[in-house]
Length: 147
Image (cartoon, rainbow, N blue to C red; front, top):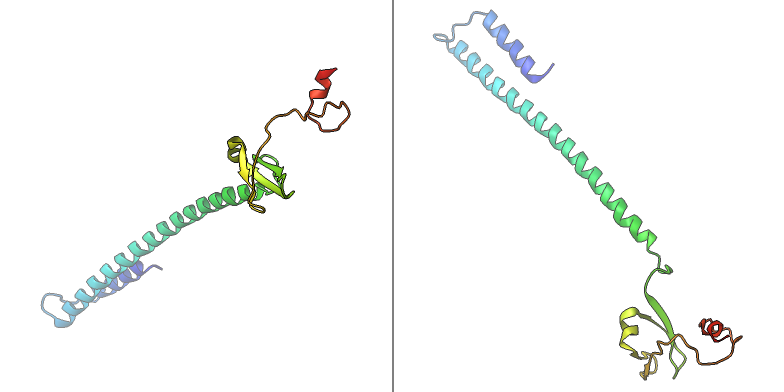
């Protein structure tokens, strides 16, 4: 039984007593108290409805957030540091032999300063190894064209 139903039952009992609410002080008091209880009951029902609606909206936001987290964190797991799709290249410093990892922007500049020995050197962007040997194993692909 809800609060409103209990207040309605109490109001019915008071009406069944045939209390004179116009002349009797006790009747006036009971009538006013029942009126206050009716208002409190309606306010509580409104609060319960609002709470239920907010709970449903919160569940929807939580579901949406779970979808966002899944999309964000699964993408991060797919982006491994070993991924070959990134545009990073390894070059060896001709001065100290340090292997450097550079990106495409540095490669396009054509020159780099080695962070190890601080010497600047030019990057060779040509595919031709210049060895002239068909079986050198350099993989440049130009040897097959020379035949």
